Image (cartoon, rainbow, N blue to C red):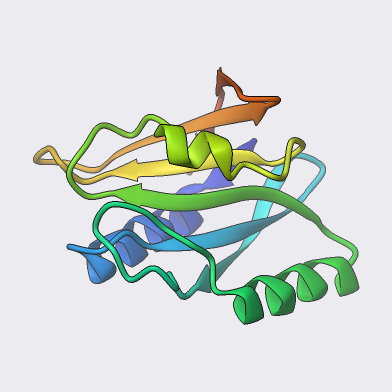
Length: 131
């Protein structure tokens, strides 16, 4: 997926604002290009896991659908560990066509990675930052 630097910066800002808890949200896309960031509430309010608030999830998915866009990615942060899907992340990956973007905040600088998660299998995905 291609993403503008400004949109990626929005995701990173969200991750920093929610720390020490994990943040979460969704990315609307058109033609494999991110076009809008939708922040969501982490209903788990935890530094160890995220759970998209069900009301936010419904609202966001309807807004994406109503706009004729696709759910391009689901994002969240890892505040204490590397930006790699945990077993919990893998178990709760119910959108096989979306990318899973993780912002790692454990180091000095944010480390953003993207993955596909299908049938419990994790694959690295390319996140092309534009601008």
